[in-house]
Length: 494
Figure 1 (cartoon, helix red, strand yellow):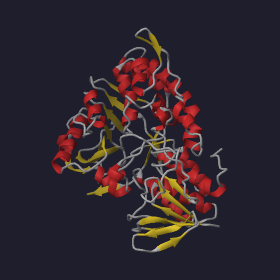
Figure 2 (cartoon, helix red, strand yellow):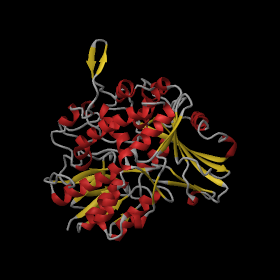
Figure 3 (tube, one colour):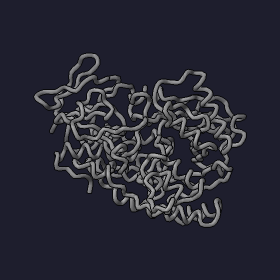
Figure 4 (cartoon, helix red, strand yellow):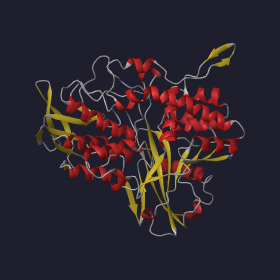
C-alpha cells in the first residue's frame, strides 16, 4: 500500500484518486482553493443556479465505468442523467433553423433535409459514416491507452478518410476541417454546423485537422446528456465517492513543488512550508513545478482559447418547447476567425454563441423565472478592461436574442464570467481551456504523456493526455491509476 499525494481536485484528479483508493492506496488530495471539481463550478444568487463550466456531458460511459469500478452504487443512483432531445437547435447566419435529434442518424438526416433542402441530410449522414472510421482508428490510442512512445505515428497519419476532390485539375483530399466542410458538405450551413464543434474547443477550423471530425461524431454516437441539478452534481457525486473510499482532502492548501529524492518523486511541499511525504505524486498537467520535457516528448504548439460566459436571471417561465441548447452561428465567419486566431487575437465582435436553457426546477426560484447561460470562445490571456468586457457580453446577449426573441426585456440581472474567473478557479494560465487530443496536424493537438521524466510523478487532467473535456478527464484519471497500480506495462482499459 503506497502513499499518494494528488495535487488539485479537478475531475481528472478525483477520478484518479477514487480508483487509486479502491486499489488499496492511501490517497491525499491537496487543493489550493476551498472546493472540488476544477472547472465544474456553480454560481448561485437569489434562488437561481448556473453551471460555470461544461454545461453538458458526452460519452457518459466513462463516468459510469468509474462508479462501477469504485463501488456498489452505479452512476445513475448518485446523479440523475437526462438525455437532451433535441441534442441542439442551430440558428444559421441566414436565419435558417434546424433542431437535431439526439443520437439518431436517421432523425438528423431527416431534420437537415427538411431544414436545409434535399440531400443536405444525406451529405451529413455520409460524413458521420466517415467520422466513425476516424473514431474507430483513434479511439484507443487517443482516449483509452497511455500515449504511445512512438506518438509521432499519430502526429503524421490522418485517420479521416477524406473523399477525393477535383480542384484546379488536381485531385485533393481534405486535410483540415474547413476543407471537409467546403468540399464534402458543400453547404455553408452544414460547414458552420461542422465548424461549431471545433470552435467550441477553441480550435481554428482552417487549420484543425480533418480528424477533428470525431468531435461531432462523439456527440452523435453517444448522445448528449445533462445532470439534473446542474453539471456540478457530477462533481459532487465523484467527490462523495472519493470520501466513501477514504480519500483525504486538504483544501486551501497550495502545493508549490514536488519533492525529488534520488531521482524519484518523494512528496510535496506546500506554500506554508509544510512537507508531505508520498511514494507517488499526481499533478495537473499545467502544474508549474513539473520537470522539463525530455527530447522527443510532445510539446503542443497552438493558440489557447478561453470562454466568456453571461449568466442571465430572467423573469417569465421557460417555454415548454424551448431547446436545452441552441447554437447561434456568427453572421460573419471571417471576422470571427480573424478575431480569435489572427495575429493579435481579440474578443470577437460577432461571435458564435451557445445558449443553454435547462428545464430544471432546481435552478430557478419558482416556475415564473428562467436561468439562461450564454457562452462564447474568447482568447486566453489578461483580463479585458471592465468596459470592454461588458461590451462583449452585450454582443453575446444580442446574438442570443436571434434564438430567444425579447431576451433583453426579461433580464432581472446578469453575471459575466471571464477568463480571469477560470484562471482563479482552475489555475490555468490566462484562463485557458484545453482541447481534446486529436491525431494528425504534426502533433500540435496531442498532449504530453501522463508519465514524466521524474519517476513516480504522473500528470492528470486536461493539460496532459488525452486532453480536455469531461470524458477525457475521466479517462485521464483511469490511465494514471493504471500506470501507478500496474506499472509501465499498463496498456489501457480493455
